Image 1 (cartoon, rainbow, N blue to C red):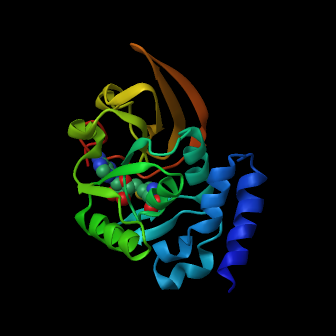
Image 2 (cartoon, helix red, strand yellow; image 1 turned 90 degrees about the horizontal axis):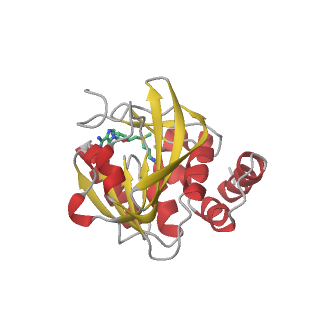
Length: 213
Ligand code: SAM
């Protein structure tokens, strides 16, 4: 299989055709080798528009969702991003390709270590990955220019709103276990303006500000 061709096809057919226009995001999605973030038996499916298992009952997110989120974060070079749910590290790599300084929290130690090793081996040396409950954010490193939650929350986690910088963007799937709405909040002074980006299905956010296990 020619993975470079598969990536170009993924970008054209799943991203551009569905409305992703951000050139940096499209470049990053064409560049990062998604197949290297899943086990070898799944490489042939890595450029389809689906989530795939990554072990520990978790999944790597759908390429379209990763691109939609990355676009919605409106990142500029060197901005500080908090990612909750490192998973395979694929989205971390995309955010780093966009020039972001990424702080990432994963509650599952095995996945966090695996993602850290993988990112290092692929040349992404400056991701700060921590094991813990990301639903409460990372207070010591706040404020963040952008925060992305890669797991479905029952309600908007208040600490994440607090940890946003002025004009900061928070993207988070909110709703029921099998059906959420991807929400984008932009902080303006004491208030936050919300927009809906569409329906989605993410694995659950487990933690103090998420589901209870
Ligand atoms: N975007 C990731 C990728 O590209 O591989 C996939 C993320 S996966 C859909 C969701 C991840 O969120 C899982 O790895 C899960 O263990 C993690 N997670 C769930 N609740 C969490 C929490 N409270 N804090 C940190 N990570 C959490």
